[in-house]
Amino acid sequence: MPVNNGFGSLSKRALGDELEKFAEKELVRHGCKIIERNFQCKLGEIDIIAKDKQHLIFVEVRYRKSDHFGGADVSVDLKKQQKLIRTASLYLQKNKLTNKVPARFDVMAITGNINKPDYNWIKDAFGA
Image (cartoon, rainbow, N blue to C red; front, side, top):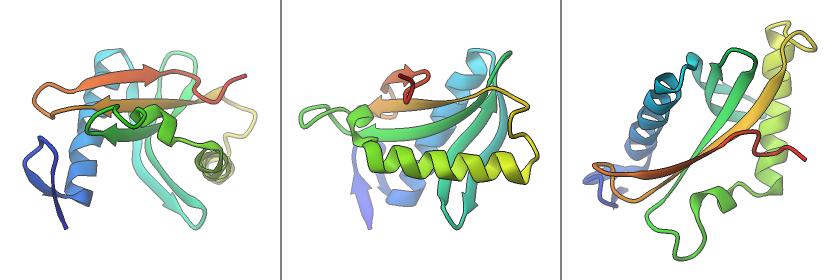
């Protein structure tokens, strides 16, 4: 179903693709290397897997047209965090990276119009 949200009339999947491309550009602009996009397994999906100088980064991209009812970042609730952690664990096991590389979970919270989006890159979003 097309969604009109300042990006034009895009399907939900097409909107997600555009938002993930935006997030990737910001990650690269800040020195990260994109390792994988849309890693999927039976446990779930990770939008972007990237690497900076020190960490393997599992990035969840979230969007809200406005923050009137809470920003995009608050939509990553405990249940979603647990699902991402399980999916990332499987990725690490599958690629024989468990205990070999420090990893973290970031959230790229995007708000507004694609032509001039606001974003908040929350590094180590699930950290203590």
